[in-house]
Image 1 (cartoon, one colour):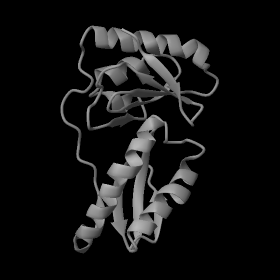
Image 2 (tube, rainbow, N blue to C red):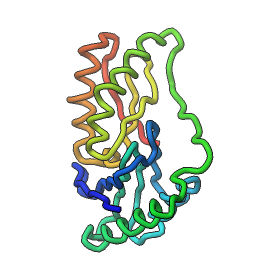
Image 3 (cartoon, rainbow, N blue to C red):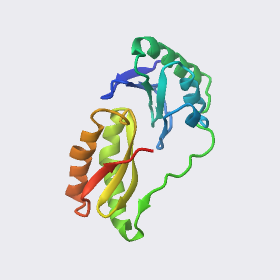
Image 4 (spheres, one colour):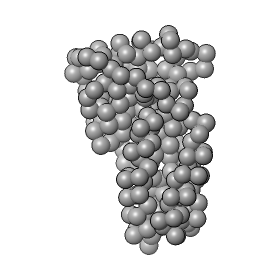
Length: 185
């Protein structure tokens, strides 16, 4: 098994591509070992000293490291853990994820559908290329609320991505959108 590694715009995060499906069309973001309980893969990665975050994407895994830990030391351990997990065909996730709460006015259903379609078709593929994801969390009074995950969470350029990229694009296609805010969970 060969696992490719890619850098991301976030220097504390690396993207690992095992050459197979990891989560398929869904994603899972774990900010701590405690939160990773339903994922044997994320739990195994958090057992490595220095791992601070794990994001599971369609066909990739992003791992965030702690300050003071070098990729030179951590990367071989992550590769070994991933290889062991996939060679032994262990499950990535057990059980179902809780549905995310969305704050929307039912009267805005048509606008929300447009926003979600734009995010799914134009934004998420680009963000996934950088080892992350962007999740719709709400729309009220012209404000779109989005959550950055994976490599994009805590990335120095995430605010610019939201404000200059996503906000401008949404305002162009959906005139009801006034601004975009980042939500942290």
